[in-house]
Amino acid sequence: MRRVVAFRKISMHTDLLVLGGGPGGYSAAFLAADAGIDVTLVESELRLGGTCLLQGCIPSKALLHVARVISEVEELSSDWGLEYPAPNIELDKIRQRKEQVITNLSGGLKQLAKRRKVKVITARGVFENSTTMQLQGDDASLPESRKITFDHCILATGSVPAMPSAFEIGSDRVMDSTGALQLTDIPESLLVVGGGYIGLEMGTVYANLGSKVSVVELLDGLLPGADRDLVKPLHRRLSKLCGDRIFLNTKVSSLVEVAEGIEVTFEGAEKSDVDRFDRVLVAVGRRPASNGIGLENTAVQLDERGFVICQRNQQTADSHLFAIGDVAGEPMLAHKATHEAKVAVEVILGKTAEFDKLAIPAVVFTDPEIAWAGLTEDQAKAEQRSVEVAIYPWAASGRAQAIGRTEGLTKWLIDPETQRLLGCGMVGPGAGELIGEAVLAIEMGCEVRDLTESIHPHPTLSETLMNAGEVFFGTATEIYKPKR
Ligand code: FAD
Ligand code: NAD
Image (tube, rainbow, N blue to C red; front, top):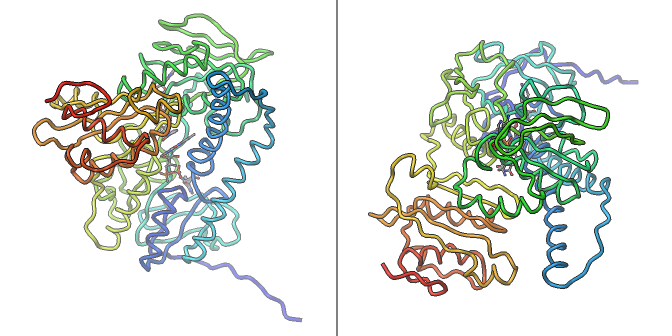
């Protein structure tokens, strides 16, 4: 009888090591492998996909889809006379469906890595020096030395939820976004701390599933990065959904676990008392995953918030190391990570490339959605930049009227001298799908006339992009604004 004995490699070398298998990391690994580079991807999780696929973008959008259907059906009942019985919510099935989406996509990534001959190692990577990484874990494919050497490394370790120490009380009732996405139950009452992307998206999910949701935000408005006129219609609708329990200019000073929930002390302009909640979701931002991975053993430099400092070509202060995605700075968005991956790989291939974008779209997938790209009005004001703002209210859109969603608006920020499109903001259902056209127009250096002379299909919400351009010229026929 022949015995097959598997020998572990004593040592391992790779041309390019990618640390982190999120959208930044796997894109970089796949692009580099397609270009003929020998690539090893080190990821501590058993599945590829990173925060975005496993604990972020995708599961949250799957749950938001459910929330949207519930709210649309409710709207049909109240506004259109179509009566449906109240939904029977089977949480197990919702969880299973969400898990299936993740499984399908992460399985696909595994196959794609295999076909491209990207070696995937399940281990936690820690830098020993600028060209050596220690591999912590018990994966059978790990070399005996538990070390891998490399010529270049792309650091794509992403970010983790920020949890202020005052909120770390060791209670299951206090969740971060990962906990909230698990959808363990539908709590009767949920306090969302932080009125940013995660707080409002996950708050929307739980509110539509039946929780009594409250939101507390430290600043004087929700979604601090977005222009106020875009936030207003969302705030109004969320207030209705949350029964007016959105508290601005307010902070949570303590959380205490009691027998039936969490007792929360509020201090602020709009709420200053003690209240009890079944669960608390802390969504006060994320911090870069740059700690505890041995970066001090390399020449990499971090800024005061822990982001890896890199040049526009993604190169760090260490000539062997590049950084991309959340760990490399704001905005912490998956599409920024994948575009930075392209730049880093091109530079490693010896080409000249830079991350030089005029417009990184931002989309908040609430109801209504908010989307913007390029210059914002707040930014223009802060930079004392002279811009002309052309706004098209969705109340004038036939499509918006037909679907009963007239609260939206589309606006362009335009250079008054050159008539170039500098920025775009939208609020309304589907704004996230519509903003792509604005990104292309801004990146292409389009002028308003390019927009108004491109025929948009009727009746669609995409027309509002063209119509806002017509507002600039005073030629929008569905609203009255004197000609320029
Ligand atoms: P990540 O996706 O965070 O991946 C990093 C990977 O590195 C992880 O898999 C981690 O396990 C691994 N890793 C870290 N350290 C090590 C180590 N030492 N060794 C081995 N592996 C390591 N963005 C959008 O654009 N659109 C959205 O709709 C959106 N929704 C979101 C919803 C939620 C709830 C959250 C939390 C985030 C959301 N984001 C969204 C943000 C998005 O998830 C991130 O911007 C994106 O995942 C960043 O990609 P990345 O590749 O830089 O890092
Ligand atoms: P965020 O920065 O979007 O919002 C955090 C909010 O919490 C801010 O409004 C901030 O003022 C507030 N805050 C901070 N400390 C507070 C406190 N002690 N009490 C009350 N409020 C407080 O952060 P997030 O919602 O945690 O999301 C993290 C990042 O993940 C986002 O910035 C974004 O980059 C990414 N993300 C993107 C999407 C998307 O693209 N649709 C969705 C989710 C997350």
